Image (cartoon, helix red, strand yellow):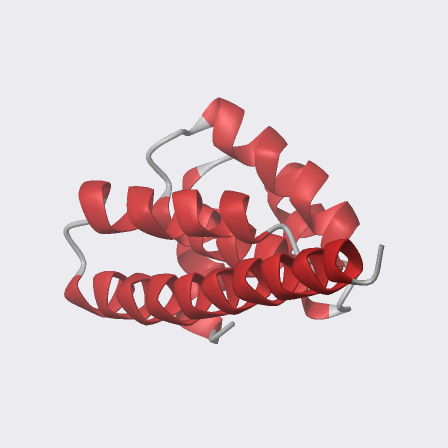
Length: 116
């Protein structure tokens, strides 16, 4: 995440919750980041910067449906064109991976059915 995004996040809400979220995120501890970011978003549900980090964390942990929902929410609520662009790209990539995973699962299910 770029420094501007992190600074904006820190300026607006409880510092310790935000620092936990940012530190976990930057350390690649995405499961911990999810918990911390959910806490941040309970305090400030319209915080698109936190929601973007949450969406990416969901994506990184394979929670593609949650990631897609978070990216879509950013597109709906954010007035920042840069965040919207990142969310649209994230939603596109997530949707493609979700569709690929669904197709692969269906293929393997059919293979197992055929081998019976």
